[in-house]
Length: 484
Image 1 (cartoon, rainbow, N blue to C red):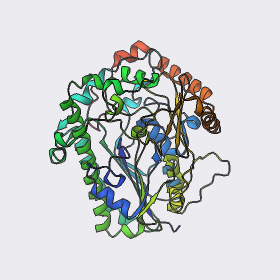
Image 2: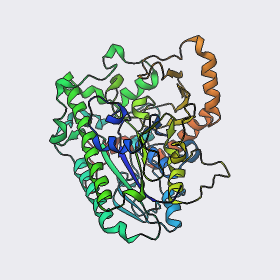
Image 3: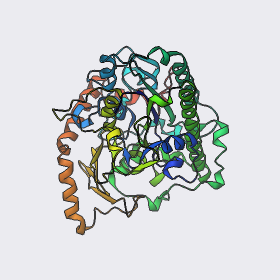
Image 4: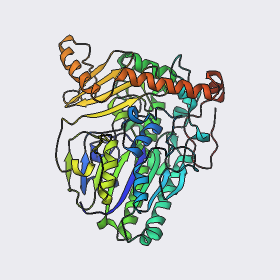
């Protein structure tokens, strides 16, 4: 593959299914759809951890949490493990970020040549309440998801507008300065992450009477798995929805933010074309993870169902096939080698420490039985959770609870957990054995909790962390955290 510039666009909490090109019947995303038509759309992209800080650390370093240990939203990337940003910079490339990073403090060296309007974790430490993994506290900021949903502007929509503007300025004014070797621009939006306050021109595209209620939302339909029940009791978003109208207000807000995101992406892609850079720039679009959006009575992320664990994954540009749908399961660890390949830098994996393979290489073939992996060790859970895709089966292992098994070919909505059927015991053991080729779940769970206990003690202990409060969502740059 001939070296070229690289534009990476990341959104926050954009569920894989919530785009027109992924078959959603309602959500309007014409710019993302157009990008998919001129490249390769992976049908089965996954985050390697369905929560912001760990997902973004893994995206940066190309290794699983069980390898590097960014367990939760209080354990941000500090730059101590080389990222693809570091590698590109060391090879003389200009590598710039605009927008959300969710790393440590701005003064830490995360590997970029420049960080423009970066969002990092609150006070350099992030969400300390997520360190509590036993006797889970009730999260006080959970009310914000339901009560802030509706038409209007939030600090997040203002921030995303600035990110889109800064990206256009960079492409027009800065990109022409770097013609001797390819540059990399990482544009990272924060929508459609809640607050679910969508600009009116996008919110009102989705009238409530045209919106379905979330699947399995009725209380008698919700799964009784203890991991899910723990999360719902601690991260108690759904308790603040008092009517069907309130639920649909949140759905319209999320759908509107997806279209708002798409519009901002369109502005960046148009600037790329106006600058004459489209023919020599590859593009990767993804999101750090998805969102439950009310399915099973859950909101936010933090579990391994398809809604939060699935991530859109689209690649386009020179050397990339067009109009192709690829059914190979992929994940964010496949981005690190893809970045290096796109920039013409050899990917050294002789020690086998990188689990991924370049998205650009995977894009040229279909391998539906490829193994992918995701894990969760953060807020609202007393048990580590581990997921693998094994062909069309999805197996979820819990360190302290019964497993789950879904046949995604026959049951793409994950309505029927097959793990309780004795006829599937051999299949479960096969999946468990494949998981153990990646990690020892019990050892990883114990290791994560040891670090979290140590960090909790260093922060003053359980009561001090609870007294500090829950800010609900990380504030945009220049906005104070609201611990209410």
